Length: 589
Image 1 (cartoon, helix red, strand yellow):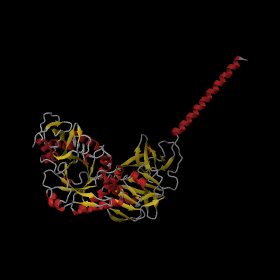
Image 2 (cartoon, rainbow, N blue to C red; image 1 turned 90 degrees about the vertical axis):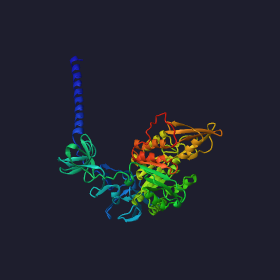
Image 3 (cartoon, rainbow, N blue to C red; image 1 turned 135 degrees about the vertical axis):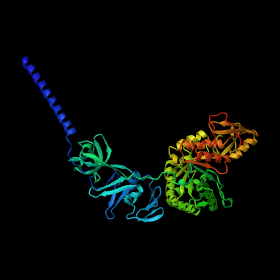
Image 4 (cartoon, rainbow, N blue to C red; image 1 turned 135 degrees about the horizontal axis):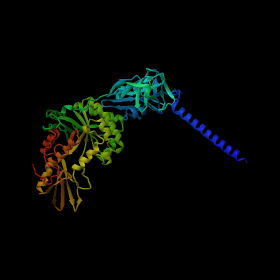
């Protein structure tokens, strides 16, 4: 073999390989240039098919139940699942009665399917089109609910798109400033075009990215456009504003001071409550859910109300359910029946008007956890109708972290959204059947439970529960015997005095602790007095609460009202003493 021919062949092969590699690289470069720098000019149909599309603000909404436009009535119907997801999480469908229930701050709307009469706060209103069931799904006439949900609804017949905008959102209006602008499906020039736009056209701009805007055309087509094609010409806002502050501003001089008055019998012969300086609201325990048919019993007394108002109080009558174990099924049945809820609401409205009340305090306790949502629904339905009569609505709740019946049965967040005030019952830390003796409301425990509650309830709506009572515990050989006696403040002091009990300051409890022996048993009392009440009520300032609600009238010592008046109304501590002072002495007043 000729050596020179062999070398030439090898060299030729090397050149061919080099050329091949160069061609491949060139092709790859051309592909990359084409992909990254050559726009895709393919135009696609944004919303193919005959199904009506739904766009909310800058988002295309997919749903197995599309919107329906009825030409005959020129009305848009939306499925209940869309309304629930985007506008009203608390909207309720009563399958049994084929009825939709909508609640707002000031309205309760009830609409039956295939019925052209809706009821708003129990008043009939004619509809152009009814709610109806289509292909197994419940549909609502959304135009009728525009003001309720503070939205604007438009239907573009050309593009077959329903367009919905929130009235409380800021919007950017943009103008196309270059020719041959394109709204694309995604943020890439290689993405297909969903709409070619002309210079001078207007778009709504939503999300902003480094080189792109998410936009919506007048036809409701949603896509992306490069920033160089448009400029923002204006920013519009139709933000809905609500009045802030208490629903009952005329009673506020500082923080709210509320007390419950446990009237278990007719009060005609008792007259009304005496004048107490600094007290704003008195809540007599008058109304009770007495039967599973919606019966509500009353112990109300008009003379009591008149005397209370003469003394400058507002009267928020308490409405309770039965607290006994056997009452749970009764409460459950009423809460889970929309007709019974409506019946109960009507009776409370009648009582409120008859007795010239200023508010209703709802105290439902010992409920099933499974009924938590329906209790919230009951408050949502009750509140607007009471507000229409000028009444304030408050709800009592147990502290977080308790049992099913006294804690887990409350959705505090939902209740706070519906009602004007929430009273958290920060007492009964150690209750009548507690396995161990202890404070009714230890200061550190109260603050901890308050902090947990504030994760669910805004401070401006929260009233701190304050106990005017204590318990006397009896132990033999370190074990509890008998149920503890419930004592008023003055009665507890008399027990301490008459038995020469040893008294010392318990820093963790923020209370004086008393102990004495008698008949082979040891008696223990964690005292509630002016000093302990001062500590607890001071938390209303530390956490900027709406005020305090005390259980119960008649159990307090006289000096407590001076403490609450000074602490809640003058933003001062009545007693200037330090919690850490170990030399605090117990004194009888």
